[in-house]
Amino acid sequence: MPDAENLADLALMENLGREAGAIAMGYFGDDPQVWMKEGQSPVSEADFAVDRFLKEKLLDARPDYGWLSEETADDHSRHDAQRVFVVDPIDGTRGFINGMKRWCVSIAVVEDNRPVAGVLECPVLQETYAAAHGHGATLNGDRLQMRDRATPRLRLAGPRPLAKRTDLAQMEIVPFVPSLAYRIAMVASGALDGALARGSAKDWDLAAADIIAQEAGARLTDMDGEPLAYNCRDIRHGTLVASPPHHQDKLLDIARRTMNKPNA
Image (cartoon, rainbow, N blue to C red; front, side, top):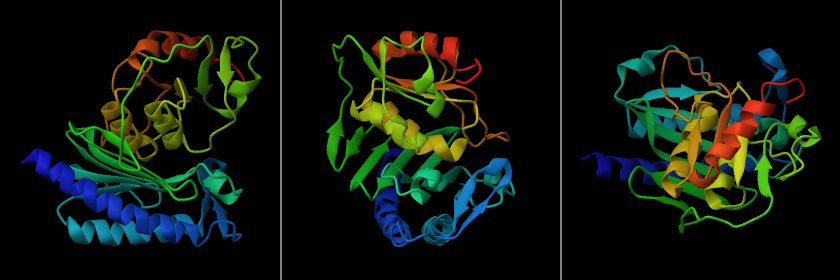
């Protein structure tokens, strides 16, 4: 049954996510070796170590699942599988390298182009976000539930240049969060009222955070307010907004006004 399958996958990902987080912590703050990928995006030896561990353990447990990861070459064999693991070994690698706390191991299962279970393991903060379709979302085992927070100023996170904009005085722009997945999880937990992303995110940045946000009662959408599709041929996504339902229209308007302008 799908529910039982989703919950079994969630338990597997939670257990292996904790182990993966421990592996990453073995490199954190210890000057890991770093290389630059195309687009000047960094990757560290910790990313590769976590990727190898998760690929071996997850596919040993679910050999019929497909695999899509930031640090594994995509041979598109994932399209032959009904269910696919979508993994970012360390989401927020630049922050990880610089000793920042807000990075995480991101693991999701995608079926029919939507995530059905996901885990974000944030070892420095000792936080584990988890969700399965129809079963809610949790933070360290406690249920997450979206609530309407009465506030004169919305707390918003996004790309680093967002804090420099002068047309967002009515917003409280929080300090830069290097992990996009964690930004979205902060919306799910109520720590943020919204999170914005430029058009550079890929499936592995989003899938686990998406199901966590959805199950907490939040939304992650494109600029048309539509949910995202995963495990497609093209895994890139455009400008995105994560928000509670009651702030979605306002956050979409802000994104349309700011994210496609210079220095956004």
